Structure formats: C-alpha cells, structure tokens
Image 1: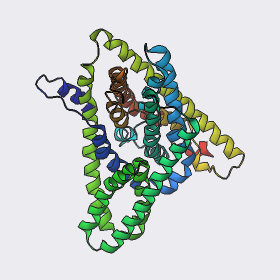
Image 2: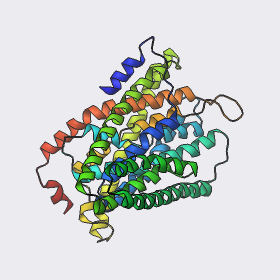
Image 3: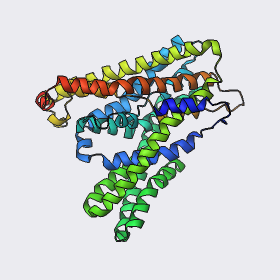
Image 4: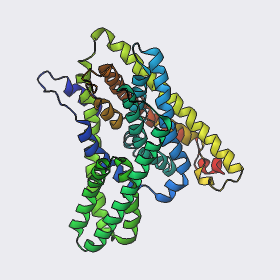
Length: 395
C-alpha cells in the first residue's frame, strides 16, 4: 500500500521532482536499520547459522550479479558486459527489512528470521563492493581479479575493525554514564551514524562497521544495562524503525514516475518485461542455491562435521520461505539512483536511464509480487507441516 501510495503521489502534476541523493539515503536509512537488526539478533543463533548466512550474503550476491549480467548482455540491446554487471550488482542484494516487515505476526521460526536478518547484515556490503567494481569497468578502469579480491577483504576487514573499536569505545562511555538514562540512550542513538560516517571516510565498509557495532553493544548491554533502560531504548528504536520502514516504501514508489519520464513511451513495456525476467532469474538462482545449501548442510552433518550442528540444518519449509523472501528493496534503489550521469571525460553514462528504470521496476515487481504472496505461502506451509516437524526433520 505504501509503494502504491508513493507511485500515486509521484504522478500528481504539480508535485515538484524530489531528487534523492543516494549518499543521504544510505546515511539516513542504513545505520539505524542495520544497527537495530544486529542489536536484536541472537548472537548464538547467528553463529549457529553462519554457514548459511555467509553463503547467501556473499556467495549468492556475486552469483546473482553474474547471472543477471549474462541475461542482460544477451537480451537487452546495447548492453555491454560492464553495464550488464552494473545492473546485476544493483539487483544482487536482498532486503530483509521488506521480508520481516511483511512477515510480522505470521509466526516465522526464529531460525528463518535469524537467517534472513543475518543475510541482510552482510549482503549490502557485498552488493556495494560488486557495484564499485562494475562501475570501474564501465569507466574504463582495468579489472584485476587479485586486486579486486584484496580490496574486497580490505573493505570488509577494515569495516569490521572500525565497528569493533567503536563498540569498545561506546561500551567504555556507557559504563561511565550508565546512571543517566537520557545520556545513555542518546549515545546509543547517535553512534551508528558516527560509525558509518567514520568507516566511509576511511574508505572501508560502513555497513559492516555498523553491524559489528550492533553485535558488540548487544552482547555488552545484556550484561550491564538495567531493564528500565532496555525498555526505553527498545521503545524509541521501535518508533524510529517503524517510521523509516514506512518512508522507505513510499520513496520507492515515489521515484517510479520520475524514472518513467526518461524512457521512450513505446519501449516502456519492453523494459518492464526485461525487469520481470531479471526477477525470475534472481528468484530461480536463489532457490537453487538455498536448496543446494540445504543438501550441503545435511551431508556435512552426516559426516559429523563439527562446524554443522543439528540446529543449523534446513528443512523444506524453511528453505522455501528463505528463497521466496529474497526481495529487492531500498539498497538496490539507492544504488541505482546513485549512478553517475556522466563519465570522467564528461561523456554521458551509457544506458543510465534504462538501467535505472529496469532496476526500479524490478524492485517494485519483487516487493509487490513476492511481498503479496509471501504471507500466503507461509500460511500454506504452516498448515501443511504439523507442529514439531521442523525439529524432527533436523534430526
């Protein structure tokens, strides 16, 4: 409803065009959403499912980007490999905010929520790295695999280090001011933004830095904070996250009419068709990879691999829900809008309007199509599977 409302508002003739700065979008939305998810995620459950989370958040992101790139290169006229990979990178990361917002109250298993939220904590960073590399290829920068791999680990490792240091710093501050609830909560509200800005200023992953901050403070708060502060902090964060979620979906809808103006009218439905096919490819690749992961975990468990416990195993129901919940969202939209209008030499960025239009439509199709059908799918699977079946299948 929020997306449709945004689209409707965007078509009001007298409404001035709202230019979305991607850097501002990232700064406003990513730190609080990521920090909240990391703070509330169960660290033991995160560690138990780290194999699946890592597979989806890193390996699947690059696999999806490559598969979308292959489709775009051979299907869309004028799409070079570099531009095709740019489109793939934009649409490679899923948005767990959308999935968890839609599934609230549907009694998803704790494991499913942990995997979806854990994936979203890392996959944004993977997608942003893939986008940087594809953008470098479009601008003519030579691509060297080992250099790209080294840069990826530096971005991730540097972000993790910044987040770890900032978590320690925040813990040190909070132990000194824990008698003052207002000051304590204020520091917890502002630190995600400071951490994100610091990491980005140092050219490492701000996303990973905020995630590490959230995980670190979550473990610290359980030992130190009294229940009164936890309740106050939770109430404030719940309001912030609720408002940001609503604003995200309105902005996604609001951007569509402005993107539509830059597309030739006789090619609109053709590009909508391309966006639909991109979504199909992304969904199929995700389903195949999730079910491959399901089989891989079962084989490792039968070999008595100590890294895979019974609680880490995936059953059919969980695998299907995780596959279907892989919707695109605000990160894809912000990356797409952030495409530069010109190259370094002043030449216009090739196929920019087409890439943005396909990306925005793909996000809309993903959120509306999978979003409307996800609750139905969960209810259907819940009716089919008796209570305790998941635990039995894990055994």
